Length: 231
Ligand code: TYD
Figure 1: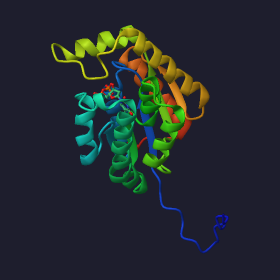
Figure 2: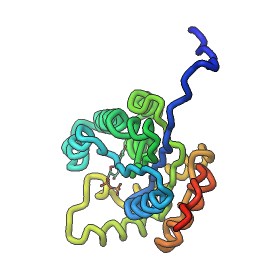
Figure 3: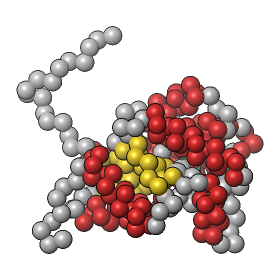
């Protein structure tokens, strides 16, 4: 294998790279409203912000989302589902995330590969297999910061149920409290294994407290440009 040559003084400067922040957590953790709030605050600092989500976030991945969340792929088994999540992720990375980061934008994604590690891992797909799919799907695009909005399963499910009103639960919301609590533990384990990437946020606090905790974590971990004079 040949070594990567060192940069010389005549090499062009590295292109700007934005920041990639992912939000993870179980049902009803309040991710989407917190993402919208963080985006607003970042835009207040004159940053270019892209909000996206998984599964989905690009036209091809949104098609796969439909197949996954209606449960149409469930009968093909957990490995086939994991492959579909990875296929959607590859398109999302190529079409949405990488181009945005290359132009210097901040990308806020509602879920990313940690959801596959937890949900498909819990569904019985071997960790080695998940790592392979992950490597293919994301290549070099890894989150700079992952905010884990942690909430006990019972509270999260009750919130998700009331948000839904009379609407149907999706394929992944239908499972019982024990499954959701197991996934919560799995997210916390991932966070403990990668403390530099993760910040665990107590999502049982009020929305204002949660958004302040997120703002502090983003500032401490990634740094923020100063507020414009008029702010
Ligand atoms: P969604 O409707 O986006 O809701 P929320 O993020 O608020 O829970 O549902 C996405 C569902 O897909 C969610 O139950 C988690 C599941 N999922 C996986 O199983 N694996 C994955 O890789 C991703 C991204 C999501």
